[in-house]
Amino acid sequence: MISNLIRFLYAFVFSISAFGTSIENDEIQLTPIITGFSPTEYCINNPTNITITGTNLASVTTVSIGGTNVSFNVVSNTSIVITSIPMITSSGRIRVFYDDNSNDTTNSDLTIKDTPAKPNTPSGNSIICKGGDPHSYFVAPVPGANSYEWDFTSNIKDDLNFIGLTNGENISFTIPNGVANGNYSLRVRAINSCGS
Image: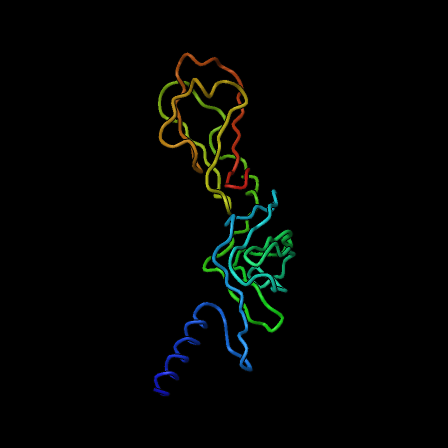
């Protein structure tokens, strides 16, 4: 009978531990648990608050992203809001700490990014003819860019016959004979989810 009771108590303590507690000096010590965060992407050019959700968060004293401490407000026992992220911070896991150094970490990184740099001047012929073979222009890949936006400084774009994709690092088109002669400028912007 006594041995059965001991086994029951051990199983009970083990169950509590699995839900974010520990036993110290015959007292149950809570540990922070992160269940999620939102948004999962942070744009340096357009800062937004990051909300961490979980349990046992009221006693959190430190929050870090990829090892860099950040400013935050404890909203409740289930919510923390990151209010400011230093410019030096890189993408990484969010970690919350108690004073006794007990902690928990997100299962995925918070992605930190900025708008991509300006592309170099497009490469291609500066004098082209109407009709005939396609004309192609390209730029070197820009780090952090997901797509590219090509544009002309006049409404000639609506008259061109584009070949293939128009949102990549290169663009190809033919010029119908009906397009007026003249000087036209070609521009390109690198774009990602933070802007261009």
